[in-house]
Image 1: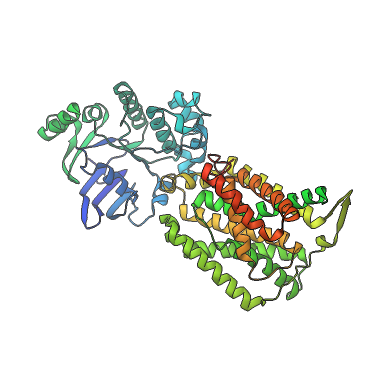
Image 2: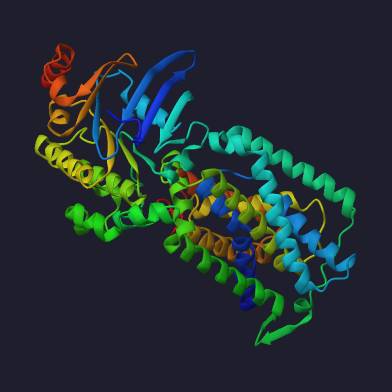
Length: 248
Length: 289
């Protein structure tokens, strides 16, 4: 996927995330080339969220993380979560990823890039509103009053305000109407086409395959298959996962 | 009874309660922490100012910033010691630890400053003002003015400042705040340092009005607790209103019944309010309100 000269946007080696004694995720290698969109798919409980949270050393539970995470060649393995974000590895976690007591605009203004490099990459509040016009209309409303789709847009908008080099999106389509899912994923694709690197965790395999370049299939915390989406389309395990999500 | 004088006393006492509670209001709202060492921090703030004037020969106006700096340092040290418990939001352990800190502060203060009552010789306390039936000192007016300024500034910072928005983010979801690139441990450090500085500032303005003694911390913590709880957890405006109401109530209760039962009466009011309105008078207000 990457040549020897080209530094990947994100490179992961021997990542292990454990709750208690048993590893929930054990990934030997995962590479995200610059300006690409990779999907991580798998059944419920396969460890998709644990994987992306582990990339930031972040968890809402008592997780222990080990392994190597490189962002644009920089080793972040021993860097605390907030510093990883400052350097450009930004996560939109699953579930509520906005501050519900704040207004839409307060959420965006309070989330700022740290440092000149991040500042140069970061979206202004006006640009976020341009990307998601619905948010502009509700700029003074509390985030708690937003619909599920609007909250996801706000969460992604907040992440873009930080000037990410790599954006990790954990199930952005969860709970959204099918039409809105496609709109959201196409917006993400547009951001990638403009140069952003994105790792997208998605349970909706069918929708993910419409936009991603590369696919990782996770089972019981391990990558059991990966490759360009065109090659993966006919993989029987992907088909099984696809049918699973189609039934769901 | 001189009603106007009692009203003035109540307003001044209320502002003193509110000023003493301001740091705890932020601490409770942002860190969800009840600091039972708060009263002893007030006592230390007063005694550091007294010591700076008595032993170091500093004027009152120089003793104030010295005490404030010492209070900020004390708050920061407490935070470092309790960081793990704070991040885990381990409230029961935190209550016990802060109670322990308070006892240690009181013991150390007794050893360092003695157990006799002392007076902070503020020049503002000697300046009297008479308006009809009401007699006040410039110290009293300074307490009122400083409280109003502190509350307005804190409210503006919480509502519009970047640091204020970080504090509100930490208050709502410290883990999600990390994902905005904010060093949550440093925000907590700032909150604790602010609490220490604010209570020391309150002590340097309020304490010169009465004799100070190293065992006075417990009484202070009780009334401050009533103010922050009645005001609504972490509500800046709520604490101001609760402090003012408690001050006016205490002044009239003391004049009409007996000052000795004021604390008991304050709790008698607080308990039904908390039963009927568990979030306090300004429940749902939030830190910026």
